[in-house]
Image 1 (cartoon, helix red, strand yellow):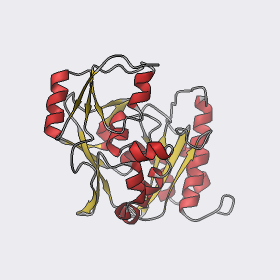
Image 2 (cartoon, helix red, strand yellow):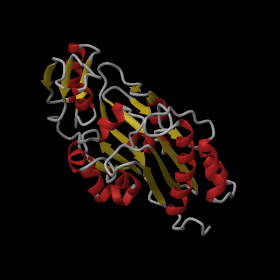
Image 3 (spheres, helix red, strand yellow):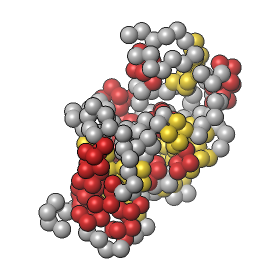
Length: 275
């Protein structure tokens, strides 16, 4: 299908982009990689009045470590994140996740900021941001990830607010991201991230609700000495996932438990059945 008519403007700075968003009103959208937004527009599931293209803004694609934190610019492409020596050294789980996003075309165009701002329940970066207590930095403020994701496709961003970077803690201990999908390049039906840091485990769940989920019950069980299989049974605690054509709510809960066990075991260098 053909998208509905819209206005287009290309910004050369964050300040100009913010002013353009103000000009076009709350129905305007920021265009970064576009691999989530454009398909929705083609199906007319999204009909923004205007697109503000931020791809011409310099320095929004920087990836650097500073003060024990990993700063990933909003325009950092998945392929750059995956191949970044800084990311692979300081937060290798992020590099692993970036390498699992979509196909080559998506990885070469899609961006960190686009995925975070789009807030799709099946998005991978939001899970990592939430479970690691990352900060989402905008042109106005810094928002903790736990306060950023409000609902499906809904965030704390104001009408003229733009994500400029995401700041993660450094974590280079045992880690794994397990993504269950029907075909290689599909979105996750369910995904589970496991990261060991500061002597404990962080566990995040993808696509088991309208926002990413941190599996604190699993984390506590592991902290208290439970084996991976026992702790993983808590992955579905409190979950109320929506069913779809690919999986029922009960199947998603089942996947959350199975994949959590698998992620923790693989992160620990263990094979299933050999705890």
